[in-house]
Length: 109
Length: 115
Image (tube, rainbow over all chains, first blue to last red; front, side, top):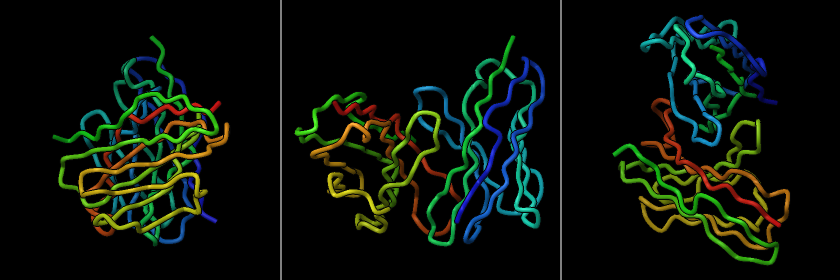
């Protein structure tokens, strides 16, 4: 079967750095995406890694290691507004986007 | 305009009712999706339309009936739903279904409650 595993919850304080891991096992792989979803809101696209290495977009960075079937989202200089759920996602060999189990990030003052 | 709109925001319906959810995008995207999301769970794909044709139906019960009248609109017709169908229904779109990156643009969702 297909699976994308993430920690269920992560907590941190404002200004800190947090890493959210994602390990995947899917039939086919074209790249790893990350989405953010605030309570009651829509998922919004954060980043995409097709190749190994680190992609940086402002305070957020995303890393991929295809040989390890592993990636992570790194959030720096945490702000209260970063409190949300974060999902990794993989497009499989039928082009469907498969979402990870989701990580709830709580940022405290 | 990078927005996907959905109506209604909230819907409460009985098990014998017929209702429809609507989704609209004006980004010129040729792929549109319906997802179902339960609380604290990831979105689950229901249907994919590519160039206004149904490409994927994830074995969704026939009480859910999708429709794509044109490239900007996507409907989900609901009939004889069960209480376990209560969830957030998300519409999404992307430039294409195959190829490219995985960027999908999601609407705010319709919170559906079935009594």
